[in-house]
Length: 281
Image (tube, rainbow, N blue to C red; front, side):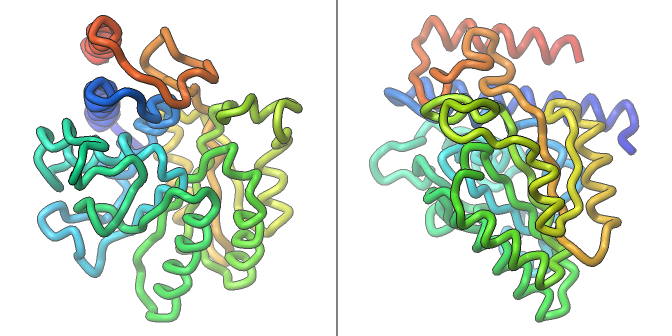
């Protein structure tokens, strides 16, 4: 359980990450801002409380792994890694620039602290399960944390992974679904594209231990991870009820926030709103 000091520190870190996201996207014509903003609370809990990490030794053998299967939301992970000291915060300004080490999608061959290259939706799910299986074979205690987008659950590969992970009893694999209710062509909770229905029930049917919590309540996220860690015999999933574009009211809960630019005027507006929210924490 988080004490009040930890809770405030984690929330402030999340707000700082959101501010870095809008700043880095303001340097390019457009970027995946909506889905990046919706996962900063999760990333803050993971990197500040739950994961075994060492920014000074990113390849530390005992570290926990993070696989951002929704790899287009790399800006959220880049901001988190920079704020944790994996590389200078100033480097964030190079997002998508020629020769950058911060490409639009997460790439372990370019960015310090990225454990797995992702981008083709669904594939990160399989590679995360593969890493978890390898760690089981090597009798390691490392955890693998997998972040899936809700629209990504349309990919059959995710459910093939779900069957395999339960069959192999990968209780060292903890997945999160960023259920922000939007994908690029419509909503995920109605018939716009593919209605996801009861996500927890689906994963439960595949043999997973499933929980659903408020994805912007850091205490609830932390508690769910503790329960997932304590569970044995099968993989776990935490469905996070989130808001796409969270933290910037102008784009919250809108399909248009999937990928867009940030004008100088909008940057000032968004940073002001986020700073005010951080001051209230």
